[in-house]
Length: 347
Image (cartoon, rainbow, N blue to C red; front, side, top):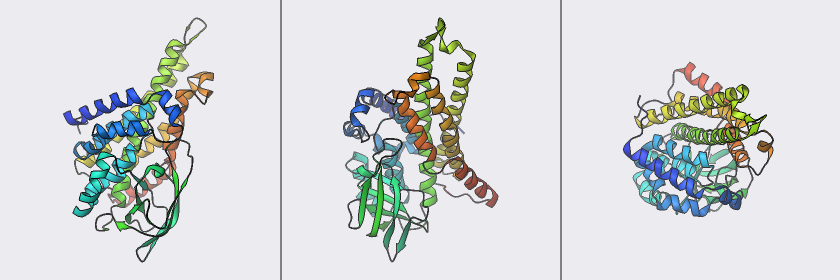
């Protein structure tokens, strides 16, 4: 395995880092509230970063999402790329690719996904019924990828008759909404040949990459704080307890990153990666929670300030901890997969 980014992947990551660093500032995030930063999203799309994902693959997307996570940038990059561009490019028909991809590439369309399937949506004679309690960036979406109870994947237009979007606020400011489907006519993604496992594995890998960035950003803030904040005439970072806590957080962050890289690399190489995607998601859930708690704790009383930038990393980390399955659920699913000898979620 070689996770060294290609020239194209490194260039895209560098461009993303610059845009997020310049525009996803504390002041802009405060001004955005719980909504999307439309100006930042427009800048990313003008730079061609969503469209580049078709060329740089899932590993390239993970690298982009790391940079988003560092800045906790409020844009629908992850959902548009993994539930839109990659899903349609890999599983869609030729007609769907021609019709849907141009808008997703240039940002005039936004995709999201009602995943994972938990029996909340049922298909009856081609019509969809049910409720998904919350879907990330649903308030921005023009189309939604919906997994029904039978694990079939449907493309639903957000403005179609029978679709109701109810705004909800989640732990992280992801412009989320409750999706209510009442006799909605959708279309199968591709030929209806069972893309659910593959889309779910790719999304878990992508959001693990986002969590790696969130954790790295939280830890960087903690290091900066403890290196400059003094107690008893010396920096907090010289205390052994602080050093050990930060070291543990660093190792957890690296574990999230390397497992996400491995899963993404295997997908791009067209290798089985179902177990690797679950492993990355488990690390993102379990270790991610530890890291963002440590980042807030290492700020001392400052970390309790809801308006401090580190608190934003804490909120994102906790949201990502539970999204697409918490640690215990993922471990149970991984155990069943290993025990059965099956390899779902492949490219």
